[in-house]
Length: 256
Image 1 (cartoon, one colour):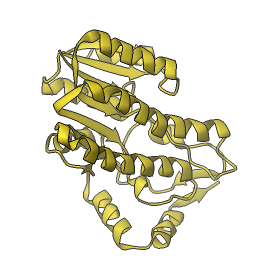
Image 2 (spheres, helix red, strand yellow):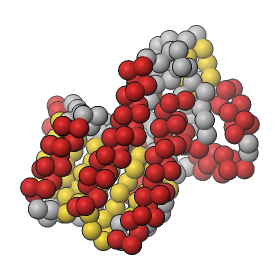
Image 3 (cartoon, one colour):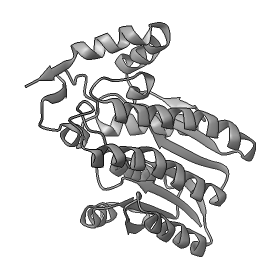
């Protein structure tokens, strides 16, 4: 049995990944994972592929154990693993709560590594790992420091993991979108002094970003970046000093 696992599937990018993997018709079952069970059940009703709902908090080891125990009992192999669970909070070191700081590290980085390492034994030649990253991985971001650092970790991890599993015929692709029309921005705004960037355009649809990400994963590309603007930012981050890139970001900030 071929299984595809999508975390963060209750909304945004994860939800779109589940829909597009469903359309590929390469899976016998799609396992959707997130905390909001009602959202997962709503998504399940929209998928044509057989679907299992896992309402789990991936920052808790016991919840990850539930998922992996089910995988071990299934006797199946994992075709796609999409790690899309994650969140960010705008604000400087004094404005973002310690709970949110630890939450970003735990979910964006630690849980992603834990899930990936736990699922890899069930993947075979031709299987694909898709790690949700961000263009914020390319440079330190004032008032978005922890989120950007967590995504820089994911990008570095994805490159290294790709080399480690290449001989098994397993691909690893880091998806690095810019601003996407999802719930992310609303969640990221703290409502304190910092509102984040004042120019969020060009906003891109999750459908377009995910379509390219799946295509790039199937082509075994290490990184997927959608759109000329964000590809240019990727290139600029390689050519310009970090200080110059941070000044550009600073100019985008707005305060109440």
